[in-house]
Length: 277
Image 1 (cartoon, rainbow, N blue to C red):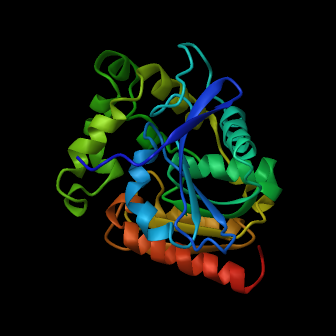
Image 2: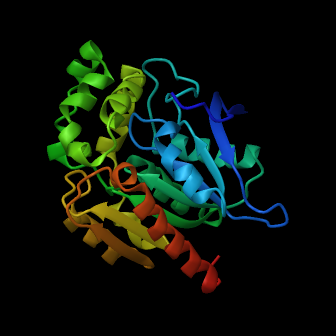
């Protein structure tokens, strides 16, 4: 097993949020901060391949969202709300004295990012969204069966729905079993509460209000964030570009970290050149 990176936790509201900052930029520079937010039932370790690809030029902040990884697990029957997840992220930024971030996320982490951009536009400089839907499709939502998750755990759901979330032949050997084991660490009641929140949400009516530059990246064969929805998102957002990856489905952040980071770097460089930030 690789050595663990140094990490810490900080009190934000009712949570001890587990986080990690990587900064290998030149000490005489004041780098922009990139916040990496993980998706449904995952944790910040899923971003590990991105860290060495970005930390030379950006300050990177990763954290485990509420109930995930090593962040405080709310008790059963606690409702999940997008407003609470927004408050967690902004509260963490406040606690760490980070004024503004480039928000990068995969899947539902991008939904949280768009909600932060709407509620606190001054705190988000840009959004990079990997396979992020603006709402959860019923066809994929129906694959999450609450009774199964309660009985067998979140790892059971992860294995059953693997084909919807990743091209198993396009990730490194060992990644699939590692990812299922990590997802299985998420308490069942947390996954159920978060899934209910996602089922009830739909950001499509508010996309035109998001004024920050947005990079949308998606697998052209994605089922959770299908190509047609990504095209609709690009059309609704005032300042967005879309990059579709042919031959790939969901999970491009894990299958193609180098390519995703290269696209993101070009996007951020363009923002800096245009002095948008």
